[in-house]
Amino acid sequence: MYQFCTDELKKILDTGREYEKKQLIEKSKIEGDKFEEYKKKLEAEGKILSEDTRELFKKWKEEQKEEEIKEHDEKLYRKHGTGLETGNYELIAVLTHKGRTSDSGHYVAWVHRRGGNLERYIRVNFVDEWLKYDDDVVTVVSTEEIMNLRGGGDWHMAYYCIYRKIEVA
Image (cartoon, rainbow, N blue to C red; front, side):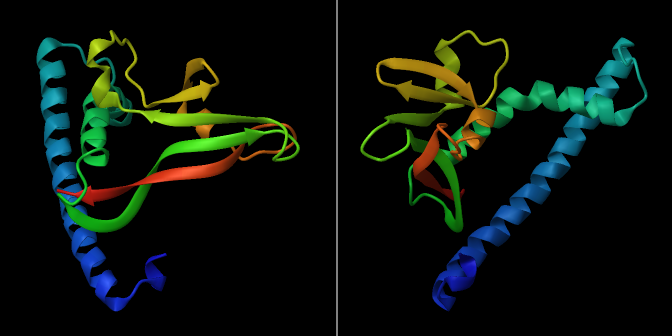
């Protein structure tokens, strides 16, 4: 929708977007340094099993997942008006309808679960999760299931999509 914004709004969004790019470049430099430290640590301990850097990087990224989700949630769920506008939004909830007509069928809510609030839970695999509210039954679902809420036959069709504005610090 950026192309439909006024020139004034584009200037505001461009400032936030440029700053966000700089942050990503800086983050990738820091990430590269941390990965090199990780490799050196494994070499010193004699734990490197393979010289395939790609596989080693995948393993390292998996270990970093919890921290990345925590950073993501801090960025997404921070108080509005405390950062620069980017014009970017992220899906945080979906209301679906399952049935043939709007007068019949069933409505279900799917809400993003903040990773930052999971400290009270003992978690083995820290992943991005969603909660499915189906009447009085609440279940944990994966992001993949949310991506499949596009209807078809008698399956859930996204009726309302709720987004949260992303600002950069």
